[in-house]
Amino acid sequence: MLSNNLRSALSGIIIKENWPLSPLCTLGVGGEAEIFTAPDSIEQMKIVFSAAMNENYPVYILGGGSNVIFPDGLVHGVVISTMNLNSIEWRTPFTADVDAGFKLPLLLKEVREHNLGGLEFAAGIPGTLGGAIAGNAGAGGHGVCELIDNVITIESDGEIINRNNSMIDYSYRHCGLADEKRIIVSVRMTFRPSQHEDQKIFENFMMMRAKQPHGHKNAGCTFKNPGGYSAGKLLDECGCKNLSAGDAVVSDMHANFILNRGHASSSDVIELIELCAQRVYNSTGIKLEPEIKIYGSCLFSQ
Image 1 (cartoon, rainbow, N blue to C red):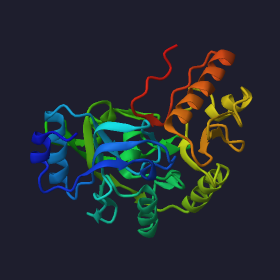
Image 2: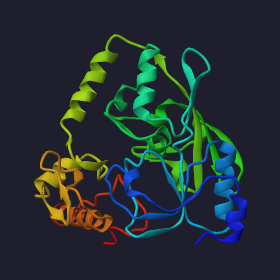
Image 3: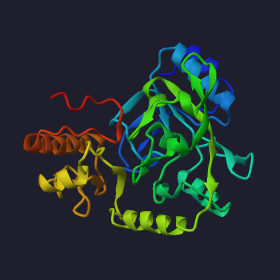
């Protein structure tokens, strides 16, 4: 239940109680947020985040919901959505300030319409820019953090910090900004002039996405590729395709995708993730690390 102090602090900001989360996540699983809000501005975001942290409420940041799993039942705490921080402003012919809630596919479209390149690897990747940066989303050896000039964040104490690229630790599917409690709210990015080969690169990435499963709800790739290996290939070789738990099933098209056949629960998905990881570990000794962010779960204790 919302404390009186938190309710007072959030006066004037739209909040929802016991708000369903499964429609906001591409896998279609998860329970209800005890408190849900989608602030309209950075200032509102700061008020909500600071108030929740001051009251020791758990805080969950939700972008496009394309790579997260919330637990079943009531999720205690505050779920803060970036969906209303969704603008873009071109500062120069090559540089844009982009809100964290701006959709990554729309950003790629904008970049291409401005005859710029460098983001082709994002073709077919869903979600928001903020979420993409938090996980350094990408493909083909590239990640979105490469294109960062500066990132504006709200820290757990309410301070707003502007970091340049050199201050950000990032690597394959990892960004140091996600290691602590903070919210990415805005990003400045610089792109390069379009090159002749960009169209072919874009088409190649789109063809690669076409080989991934469609028609069922999913959260994208389940596991990160361990060094030197393809997670999908390891899962396939260990017989994980078509494994299921409840209404969650491993795709027979690509073993690194878990699908919701209609009524899967978060518990079904987590059980299946653990089963697949254990199979690979038992067969190869390789520990797979989830690419999906799983809230409220302790996986892989072996």
